[in-house]
Length: 109
Image 1 (cartoon, rainbow, N blue to C red):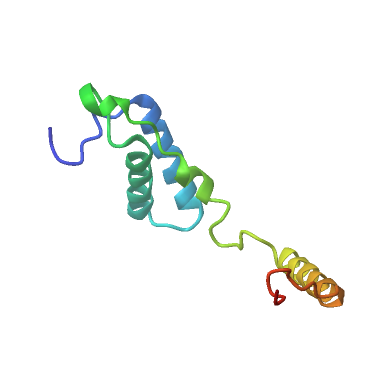
Image 2: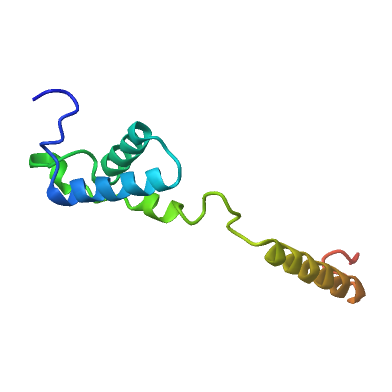
């Protein structure tokens, strides 16, 4: 079988690669680069083509499916960072207003 042959991939894997390739083309990638991205993603998820024997027990890795929403944008919005900072400032202020309690162990006997 020649190098680069896709004969050892399932129909599901081929459909997945086609979908990823189309998506990459829509985002402005060249046809060749889109194909590279598609098959690299399929290989990452399915750990290669059809598996038999000891390699068939590996679970699929769907991490790359979830990365799409995170790339190109912050995972936490600016507003969330601002709110967290204000909450922290309020907490610090409240802690400053509390009376300091001395520990029993710190007092001389």
